[in-house]
Length: 62
Image (cartoon, rainbow, N blue to C red):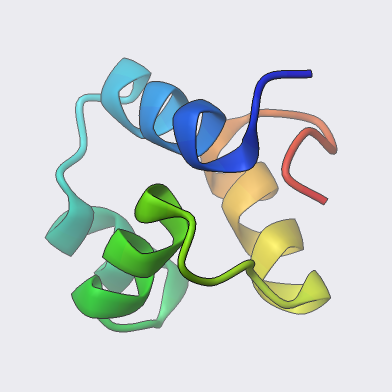
């Protein structure tokens, strides 16, 4: 699998969402999404599940 930051960004862009839209849909801050996409932080399990569900990515981010 591709590294999480790269894959998250790819999935987000494939859904035509910006970081603010994704953050709002998942219930987190834009800065947290940015931290995931830069590799500074890794999503907690529940957040990763929410991201996978929203981005239709199976369990790629979990």
